[in-house]
Length: 239
Image (cartoon, rainbow, N blue to C red; front, side, top):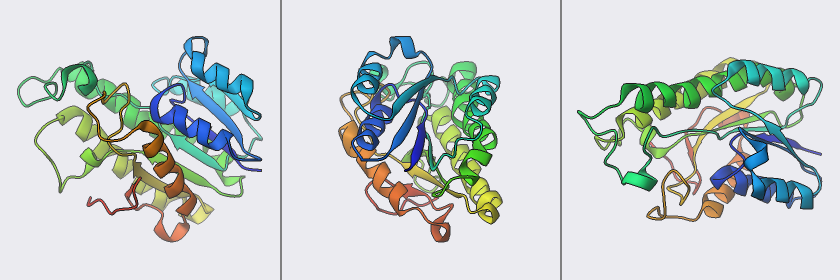
């Protein structure tokens, strides 16, 4: 019976992924978010579904990540989805794409914070939970990235966020190489331009579409394609 751990599970893509996996017989889901007491929809889902538990976790806090890993010692984790991420001080949902243009960087909020959460958080998750993954049957680490990580397709905006996601991709690729001898599969996955709190209603797809696409790609993950940059819709994204 597979066990999945999902970070940033209280809303958007993370919440939709929890719902999808909770609807599958035999799955156990460990849904992580910063403030479970405020996650009303997630708590309602956990109360109604079998096999869903909630854990408090701030992925910018490496001590908290290590603490949760120790708390879950001995629990094999088949699927670990590093989903929690931030854009910067003012995400596109509130400003369109006016923030993080050249010449207007807020280096703390738009560069350091996204790097701390998106990149260091992902690396800390991987290091803390590597034994849990290695002890499982599926051994899959999915890292939620973004098409804006593509260097070839750079658009000249979202400087801090795009740089953090490119770094996430490099981190995932290195993890794929480093962990392959242990049978652990790692892929960065673009979830689509979804209507989340980060992107806003102007985005192209509903969160459930992106979440389902991510789950579909996770099901296809294998050691042969470990390290590849995947898209929710199955298309290839250049590095």
